[in-house]
Image (cartoon, rainbow, N blue to C red):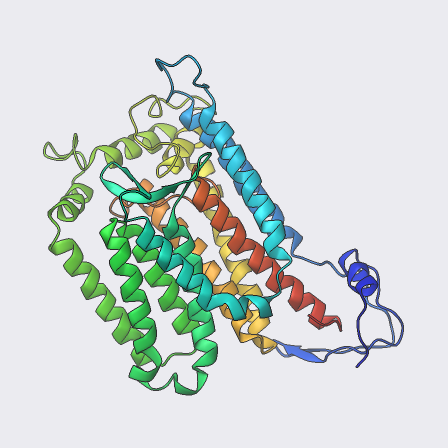
Length: 420
């Protein structure tokens, strides 16, 4: 097989056909075989453009909503130097940093990611330990989840999501031969997740632990772990989370507040955020009150620009806006999962599991955030991916999606006769 030169790679990126005589790697994807023919291929896109437009659309809409939801937060500020749009400026900075990081990450091959996967996981654990140290971690509202970096705060739990995903995918590739043996296949991953979970619960951050547990479980399932094993592990996790809630008075209060947010015992306490989120969405009705017209964001709904951004969006854009956001996230998740299946069909198991793991991560976290805003789930401190204010979340979301685009790029390269 002939060697592909740098000029050939650049030509493929811009859609130019390969040189005459270049051999192609025959692959089979969903029953369709791709081999070289005498005719030169047409335009070869180096990445999924529709996926990029969906990501960009969510980010731009989120940028507008962050500004709208945070516009009143600095009203009455004593310091005249405080910008009215400081959250917008910070969010723009987060998007810029995330975009630059995504461009750099896209250049890294999946083979390299497979090699460094355990080290990314180890670094995330070290940072989860560091954030618990008083002279490193920052405490906000009783939770120690951030490390101050000057212009922005970094949240190690976001890196832990990516680290767990990479480690789980790498683990399943290495343990393919023992995936039918329960203890041999599951025990090391169970220990790893238990360590991460213990550190997250010490912050505390049960929401991030829930997402990480689902990412790990999803990767194990997609990697081919026996169905009976999967159901048993799922049952153990459900029991574990149930005990965490039952043994924690303030977590029990959240459940009771979720069941009756407008009750006299909870309306001004644990049910305050949820009740005002429901009021905001109710005010929006079908078409909303118009961009900028939200009343709940005027110091009534706490965390309107982060965890409850969807509530403000529902108030200003109505049912139409909420359904549109849900539809875009559903399409985004489905498209990412397809890219993962495509990679696995070409025997690129690690790449496929990583892409599908990102789909599980983005889809599940969006589902939880939307469920909380709509009153379908108890309140959890999880942001809406790509849209909510939060530098660490935006940064890691874009890095994860850049990895998915890299998987898609390598898929296309292989299907058209190139080499990774």
